[in-house]
Length: 167
Image (cartoon, rainbow, N blue to C red; front, side, top):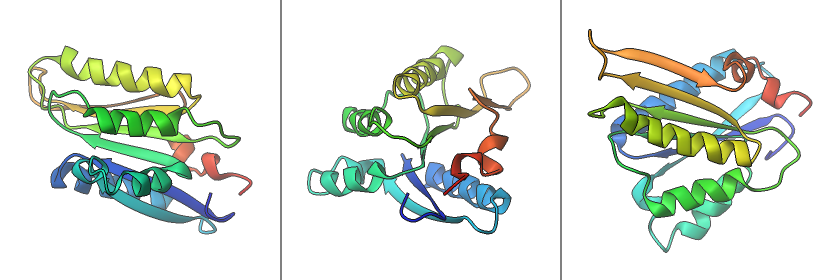
């Protein structure tokens, strides 16, 4: 929303590993966008968003985001400040479509633990009329790793630039 041909992505990440995973996703997305669209990316580590001195800047950063990529790991709930930050963005009135993409590394002892985070984020996205995509690696299944991608609309819609049409 910065300018007609800019697609703004804000990444909120828990640790360096999850942040790197989110950046790789952004790079893959950039390959699939039309050449007329430029991606602007800002990254925020959870602990920086939680810093009272930086919270206002973090809110300003996310306000105009076309996509929020949340990269989390483990079986913890989101820290309250992070959850509030995401909710504020998701529930903000807007005229153009936006997307919440959750990357979860599957480090959970039971599948229900990641389902709680997925259900929370999906519910929040639905309330705010935000497209929601869950990209998870489930290591709790027999035979190792299973990667899933779930979304209300096909994820390819983002890659093909449908969220940035007419800008």
